[in-house]
Image (cartoon, rainbow, N blue to C red; front, side):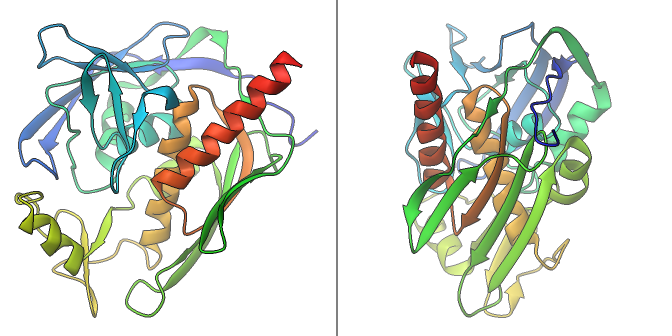
Length: 289
């Protein structure tokens, strides 16, 4: 069957790799070290700047509500804006890794997952001696309302596919749509380099609150009335590609690959998490039945 589960081995990276850069929110220099992890370890963040070296698992149970980003919390510590590094790991099918970070915040890099993908590719990926256990969606599950929604239905191929519609009304971003089967190849080619975007009004509001002071329009896409300021798009539909990049990262908080076809309309981090919560609940109910 074309949509039967693909029971590939769990994977990790061959050796440690360091990715560093400035945090978009706090403006400090941050160093992230990705390290190999054993079978069934999943992805775990480790705050090396704290005495205890607190570990924060990349699971939905660790997620806390935050504006315009995905933050995780455990044992009194937080890691912030984790969606891009998680997206890179999930997009390349890296299931197990330790993510050592010198700050709560992840480096913003260029606003995409490109730098994390380059780091992973520079050291390579290896198979582990156990299979993945994917969540295979077998019914339509939907969250949201007419203004914004996301739904999962049975997979169209053995993995994740996404059909995303972005709608910013009138203006330079406008309406964009893209459909993609997410594989390591398509992730590298079509999603990894898509950058975070923000309106100039929202950027000015952040600066007024003392955040984002180290970021300028060359670091990510800041949209004015005529389009990006002091920057150029990598694709005409780069904004919808970044939304899909975020979906891949947010859904990785399942701790397992998800095999499903997703349809989304104006969905963001909150709705992505709500869909995942509903998926995990349904999965648990079936396991107990």
